[in-house]
Amino acid sequence: MSVTLLILVIPLIIPIIFIQFISYGTKIFFYQERSGLNGKVFSLIKFRTMTDECDISGKQLPDKLRLTSSGKILRFLSLDELPNMINVLKGDLSFVGPRPFPTLYFNLMNEEQKKRYSVRPGITGLAQIMGRNNLSWKSKIRYDLEYIENINFLKDLIILFKTFRYLFTSKINEDLGDKSIDDFLPNFDA
Image 1 (tube, helix red, strand yellow):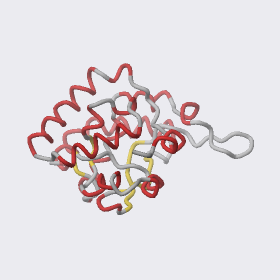
Image 2: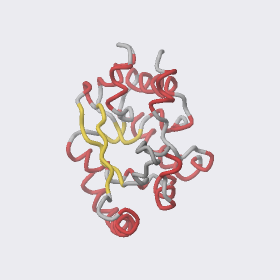
Image 3: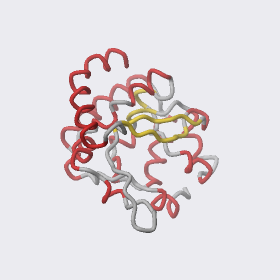
Image 4: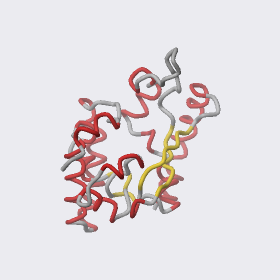
């Protein structure tokens, strides 16, 4: 299915790569280590949406200051996620499952919260259709655990359908920035 989708979106990917090249040079993609099935680390692939700009002390500027105009559009339309299909092909991701968190978060979770790693992470999941970046970390994890407890193919299809609906209706009011580790730390306790 991911091969078919990749072929179908090639007419979309080619212009994005061209725009990415103009915006970022050869740094078209963004790679980040994430924790997957059973906590195994993999490299998540996305289209780059931010610059690497730093302040005068060498500290990276906040995400909102590094997010480019083209990056905002890619994130708003979730087109920055298209390279995730490569992760699906490699077996790192499935289409539906808990969204993979950066590896740093794994050791901050208690054993109950780590149950979210008992299934392959997904490009989309229950937390994404229930509010995505507008949810607290605690809520995201709660939805991930609810998904795992009630996992079945029909619910996956419903989540996929609602994801597409959400992309075209509910994203207008969404915060385009990802929640950072600073947001996670005070809220990781279940």
